[in-house]
Amino acid sequence: GAVVSQHPSRVICKSGTSVKIECRSLDFQATTMFWYRQFPKKSLMLMATSNEGSKATYEQGVEKDKFLINHASLTLSTLTVTSAHPEDSSFYICSAGLAANTGELFFGEGSRLTVL
Amino acid sequence: AQSVTQPDIHITVSEGASLELRCNYSYGATPYLFWYVQSPGQGLQLLLKYFSGDTLVQGIKGFEAEFKRSQSSFNLRKPSVHWSDAAEYFCAVGAYGGATNKLIFGTGTLLAVQP
Image 1 (cartoon, each protein chain N blue to C red):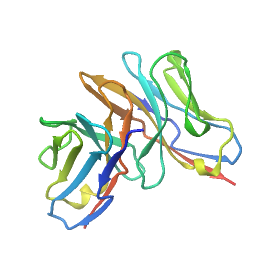
Image 2: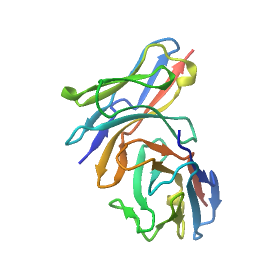
Image 3: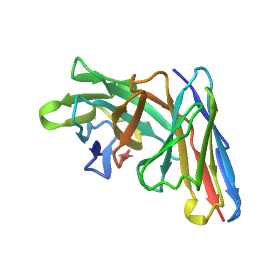
Image 4: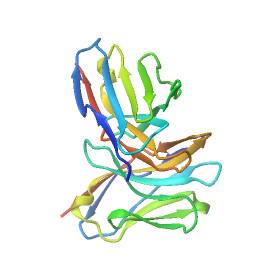
């Protein structure tokens, strides 16, 4: 199956700093990637749809200036948490599909962000 | 709007016993339905999916699920649970618009397996 990789898997940062998380499709090209956030003991909340070569589409209630998404190539999307605060601490997961409307998404391993 | 409900937050079964995890969905058209499993601190692994055709779908690790349109359900089953099945299970419905294929997830069911 298709492989999606995230880096870093864990990151700890100080409040007020910015953190970048990378999501790569290793063996396929992904024009669209999705970023999810998972709170402890909670489900996955879709944050945004990352579109290669264009602006990301954010879900209602997600601050686009706080969570910057860049999809500069067909194999890489990045999520930057700007001016991080402790409430941004969470598990962030990216996913990508092989082609539009096939339905199946492949998920990265997730990135655990802890803001001190 | 699309939504997924998993009524059971936490289930405990004995090893070797049968398992059924419930999932109900709300979607205006024929849904694409998925079950994913997540081990602690890990990403998600696809167990099985339903797009069309046979309503009983076979997946990996001995899991199966049945799509019942009349009940808007897609329950996950396994005849004999193994200790390694302890994990969190998520049901999801595919929400499609244009060229995108985002998934909407249920709240998850945490499965514990007793020896």
